[in-house]
Length: 208
Figure 1 (spheres, rainbow, N blue to C red):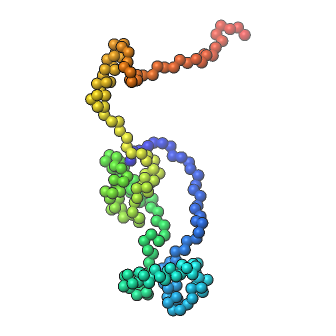
Figure 2 (figure 1 turned 45 degrees about the horizontal axis):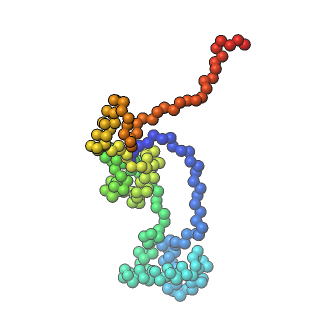
Figure 3 (figure 1 turned 135 degrees about the horizontal axis):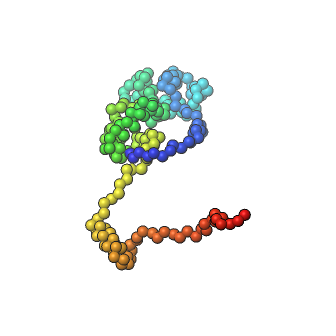
C-alpha cells in the first residue's frame, strides 16, 4: 500500500457501544448444568429463575445438545458438546502492538509487498506464519495500515501514451511552434487571468 505523509487527525475517543439486548450465550459449565438438571427432572421454570435465560432458550439448548449428541454419537455428559460453537463465541481478540508491528513490517518490507493489493496479500497467505489469534481479513488489514499512516487507495501510476496520442501531441507542438491555430478538440495551456485589483498607493511624493 502506498505511504502518505499526511498529518494524523486528532479524533475524539469513540463512545463505548452498549448493546440493546444483553448477551445470552451461556458458558460451557452453565450449559452442562442446565442440561443435566433438565435431564434429572427439574422444571425449566425454576431454572429460568436462577439463570439469565428464558424457558424458550432452555428448550432450544436442550434440543440442540441432543441433536449434536446424536450427530457426533457422544453421550450428553461429554464436555465437547458444550463448547462454544463456531459463530456463537465471544468477539475476536484484538491484536497486540507487537503483532501489529509485525504485520506492518511485512507489508512494507520491499516494493513488491508495498504495491500488492490487500486482498492479494491475504489470499497469498503472507501473514499466516505470524500465528495471529484470528485470521486477518482484508478490512482489518486495511484499517491497520491506515492507522499506520498508509493510504487506503491502490498504488497509482500514469499510463503510457498510445501511438495516436503521441502523434497528436507532436502535431500540436509543431503547430504551436509555427503559430498555427490549434485543431478543434485540443486544449492548450490556459491563459493567465488578468488581475483587476488596484495596487495600493504608497504615498510617494505626497506631503502630509
